[in-house]
Length: 125
Image (tube, rainbow, N blue to C red; front, side, top):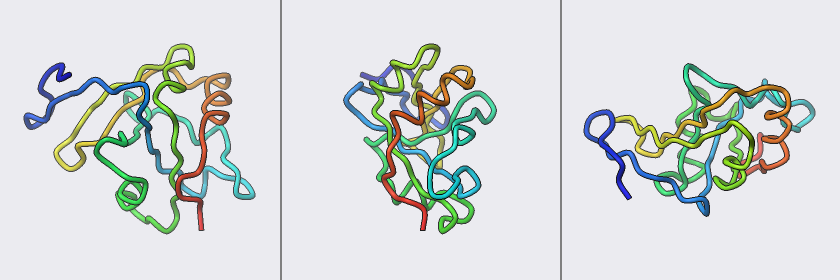
């Protein structure tokens, strides 16, 4: 279902619970190969992710300034929405139709919950 038109006429769509979100993780947000809670933070209004309908993990990784220093994690949309205070909003931009923000405060409790629902789609090298 299309809700409205976003930037440059890209449709903002409702994201189904069954879909997945991909998120780049820079090596600075890991310790001994494990994610740290600090990986889950808002930039501007929300935490930037890519919707699996329009992206695959490698495309998400390639959007990084230095892809070799980034891995990609994946999370179920349903699991993200189950974290209190978090909302999933499709926010496409001209260079990335998959762009999706996870809105809501990323306090210590929510960051631990994000850790629990995340798994590596592309581990760090």
